[in-house]
Image (tube, rainbow, N blue to C red; front, side, top):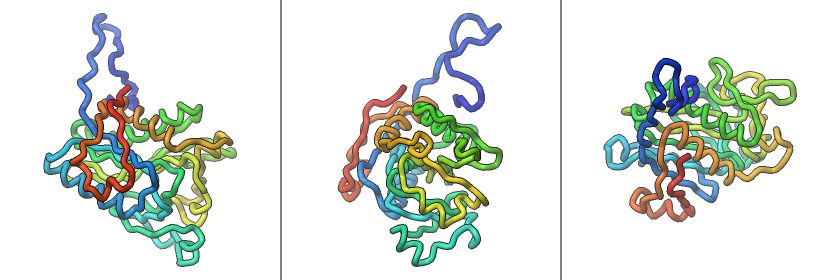
Length: 268
C-alpha cells in the first residue's frame, strides 16, 4: 500500500478492533546494481530484453539501479524549443544524444546521478499509471529524507522538487512507459553530479526549471553507491518487494562485463 494515499500497512483504525491489519506477503523481485556508468544504448537494450521476458512470464520483476555515461535523452513530448544540443554542446559536455519512447521531454543523465529502471508487472503493485508514478515519487522523497532533504511534488509536474535558493528546484525526474501491463524506463535522482549540462536544455520541457542535486543542497559530497542502496531499501518497503540475489541466467554474458552486483535479501 502506498504511503502516498495516507495509509500505513499494519496500522490500527478506530472501530476496527484491536487486531492490526496484516501486511500482504511481499512480491519477489531481483535487484541489479551496476558499479560502473553504463552507456544509455546498452541499458536500453537490456531494459527491452527484460521487459519482453517479463511480458512473456519467463522471469519476475527486476529493478536496475545504475549511473549513465553522459547522455541527453529526448522523450515523446520533446519540442525543438526544449533543446539546442548541437555538435559543439555535445563536444563540450561529452554527452551523446538518444531519442526514447518514454513520456516527457528532454533530460540529462550522467555520472553521479542514480537512475532506476523498474521492470514490473504493474497490476501487482498499483491500480494504474498515476498511482505508479506517485509511488516512485514516494521512493525518492523518502530517500531524500534520509539525508534531511525535504522533497515534494508539484501539481502536473512529475518528479520530485526541493526548495533551493528561494525557488522550486527539480532534484529528481520521472519518465515511464507501460507496455502489455509491464513498466519500462523510470526515474533519476541527482546525487552528486556536474549540473552544467542542464543549462543547455529546457529540462523536462519546463521553462525556468531550476535543477539541483543532493550534494548542492547539503553543500557536501555524497556517495552515489550509498544513496542507491538506500533507494533500493525504500523501493522494497513502499512497493512491498523482497529483493533476492541476481540469477545468473537473467543477464547475457556481455552484461557481466559491467561488473554487476546484487544484494540478497534487501527488504525493510
